Length: 166
Image 1 (cartoon, one colour):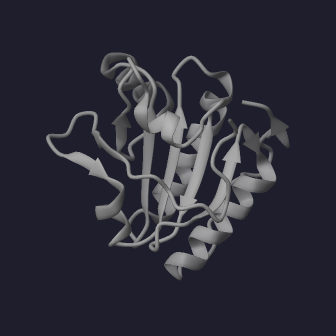
Image 2 (tube, one colour; image 1 turned 90 degrees about the vertical axis):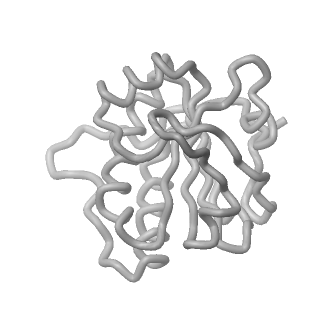
Image 3 (cartoon, helix red, strand yellow; image 1 turned 90 degrees about the horizontal axis):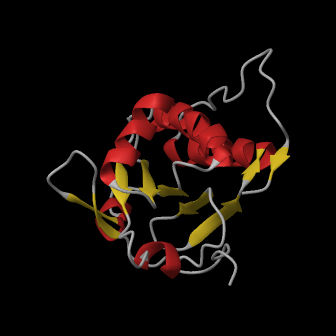
C-alpha cells in the first residue's frame, strides 16, 4: 500500500512527544494552521539527508502559524540521539514501535515520508524519499501559507542530490 496521496483526509495523529509531557494532536495543531508531518527512522540514510533541511524549514517558519512535527519509528533514546546528531529542534512524536499505528494509518512503505496537511485536514502534498524539487515546492507552500518571504532552503555550494529513494 503506497503512502497516502494529495487530496486524501489525513488520519489523526495523537502520539507522545519526545521530551514533553503533552502529546502531539494533529487535530489540535490544525486549528492553528497547516501541519508538516515527517515520518522517519533513525537508521535511514535518506532521513539523515532530509531532516537537516526540514530543520531549516522549521527555523524559517515555525514562529508563524505552521506546525512541523517529526514522527519517529524508533524508541525514545535512539530518537533523542538522532535529534542531537542532526540538530533537530522541532517537536518529534514517537509512534508505537510494536505496531506502528500512525505510520500504518498513513500507508507508509518507505521513509522519509512527508505530508503537508491543510487546516481542513486534507493532505495537499505527499512526498516519499528525497526530492529536491518537492522540498522547494514545500518551501514555497509554507511561505505562502504563512505570508512570510520564501526562505533559502539550499545554500550556494551545497552538493544536494536531486532525488534519492527512501
